[in-house]
Length: 231
Image 1 (tube, rainbow, N blue to C red):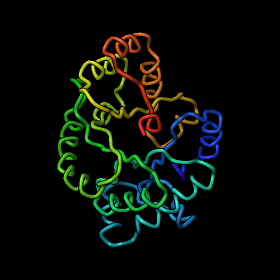
Image 2: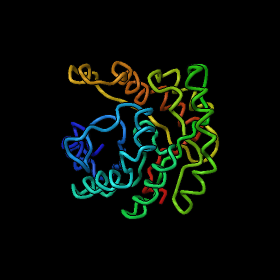
Image 3: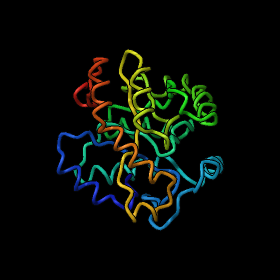
């Protein structure tokens, strides 16, 4: 996140792990603009929709400024996605395609959750189903870019634990899948942050490093890979 409070620390971590894929998590909702320092970005998706309709925010300009900051810091992005999946908005998707081409970012997130298990809430399932209506526009706008065959993790955001992870592994379809997760440490800094994902990050970290999960991955013959390795 080019406008994240921990941007400098993220750069340090990236430098310590040179083989790690580092992507752009474009932010058009929440936080401060990079293109116009001091200006707050829309607070909610509804606010963003209104701002886009009234042309109060230009996603092309903001996207370019955010990617430029990351590139100027020495990062060569392997992929790009958006905070709150805002590239479901057609104008934002067009901006993503433009900036990805300009900065030679080959992979773009395909945010259509193939579905998981009973841990996914009804609201998340309904939203996920609605999101899939955007598939035709995605395919047309992002022609020429790389996208995974499948995507998952959206429906179980905030409820991902070892059980949910094992269910996801068991239902994983054949093909290339991007698995979205939010692992972390629930420190006092995180507790004070304006995010609902706090204690859940510890559970996700435990799930992702669980010996049971590792065994399930090996049993199904799943290969953990990276964007650059595939490219």
